[in-house]
Length: 162
Image: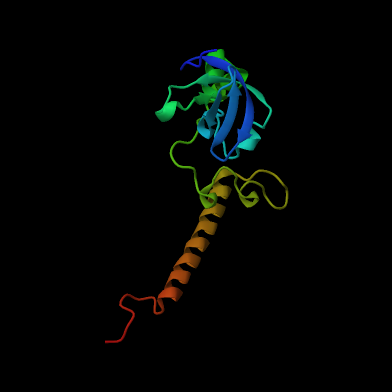
């Protein structure tokens, strides 16, 4: 079978890396599904979406340098009208653009102190969550400023006697 851009083929996941999954497609060729083409949602860990041996449908993307075969599970789902593509579009969720957030700035999971009250286990109001967040943010900024001043020595510009 001829591998041409735009075709939707069946394949089997043969390997997984941090940046994508290798798929053995019909006709004996192997292509790569980049992590950004795995799912319509943000993919933090590729192992949460696919595993070696999974059979998938992929769309062949336009060839890049060296005639490497680039594939997309996400685009194949869109064209076939797959349930995952419909569910995500109905929810109105969007995949984050640009660089992946650093671990310290990953806001997808909020600390428990911001989501539940301590005594009654009922959700906090937005105002309560906002005030707790502001308080913890102010404390962190104070700690950061204190650490910077202690590293500089005097906490003032110049830092030396003339």
